[in-house]
Image 1 (tube, rainbow, N blue to C red):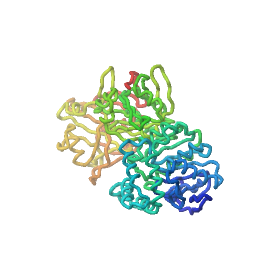
Image 2: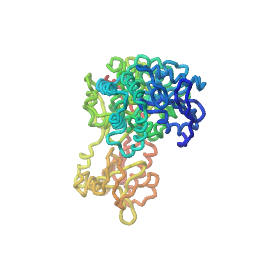
Image 3: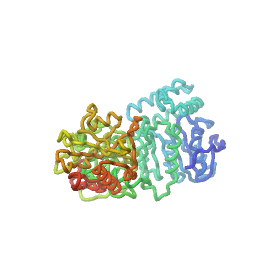
Image 4: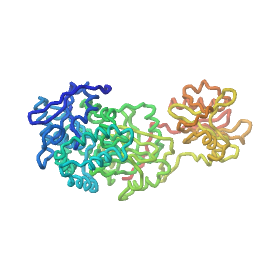
Length: 597
């Protein structure tokens, strides 16, 4: 997408009095604003899209310079206003982007006249509000008098941007407040009263929505929540949900670059892409994320038809393909959640860590409210991503395959994350913790030399040593932050936040079997300390370092090689000879036992 350019737009009026803005050239796109706004609120999108699209932004009935709606309007009144504008402009078919109330109008337009709509984007749209939200918005609607309400406008800004408004959103909040101050009070009141009761108007009709549809909201939008967008995407035959992390209700104004990029990418897709988003991942990093699953345990999640979170425990997880990025998980036909997951548009797979045994058991049970026991956030598709997971894979449903008494859910990965925590395993009917106990092994002998190869973004942490040489962080025993001679004491003294992972090497000195060396793989956060003794070295530059200890040099040469091959092992022996005992390769992560639903 091109950088924002200050395109000149044309404001005009259609024969029925509808006011609109037009700019650019190319495939036509109609923008419909929300309650209290006007066509000019789309200026950031016009500036970013007019180089490729014919952008038309309409003033809804009762807003901007357009006439008032009927005393008791319906969504169809606003949709028919848009159709009349298309007729006036001689446009047979357009893509439609709507925000909040404008998104409901866009949906109504696509349902009322599907032959006039190519694609639809619903931003921050409401759907089946929970009772407490429905009561609050209807109370606000009932209080409107049609004579303006400065206090109510201030409360609206607080709901949309935060109270107080964050400094970085001051300009966006000011622009939004200015639009609210200009709206016709009577037009606002009539439209808002409709908006307060229209959140369920399309529940029965969304399954007939014939066009590709993107439902996009912000993770922090409590009134147009990710669960609402995920539920609508689930009902629409060609629906897709995207959740923008950290964004709130006015994300198109607050972060126009991010929001517009998603809109433009969706509108640019051809029909062959409609079944799943085309996502490009760096293959090695994706393989590393898949490698976080070590014959382990997962919780699979989605959003149900009513916007409620659903989940089950499964160990039948595996990677399928790197290009395109595909994974699969199985669910039994007899599982209570099978009807929900078999018809879901998206789902997330959460790989559990060693401390999440209780969550695994609860999600394998028939507990009434499984999500009350865990902390979670909506992923990019709106599906719940559990806090603390070793890895998570947020997926669109690529394909459902029936296999015996199970269904195989093949997911196209939209987003993923992983960390260095230890995964939870399951074998022969019992949980296992495959991570070697750092404390027990490191404390086996009082004089054990304990060190770590700590990585961050392809760089390894070294400490400068006398004579221009380098060494890895190490100490006598694992110890604690208060023990200055231990590894943890050294890291604490240098303000290094490290997370130790798997064991990498264990050896004894050839001439002194009582002297043991233990080294772990791990990760670290780049230290804020100005300690000049800390050096971050690219992995491919390690070979050129001056390292005094030949055993450490040999170990690091193996680390570099295994990073390249993405196949790690554990060295056991002495400083002269020993063997590397391989771990399981990371692109095969499945277990044949059945899952719980």
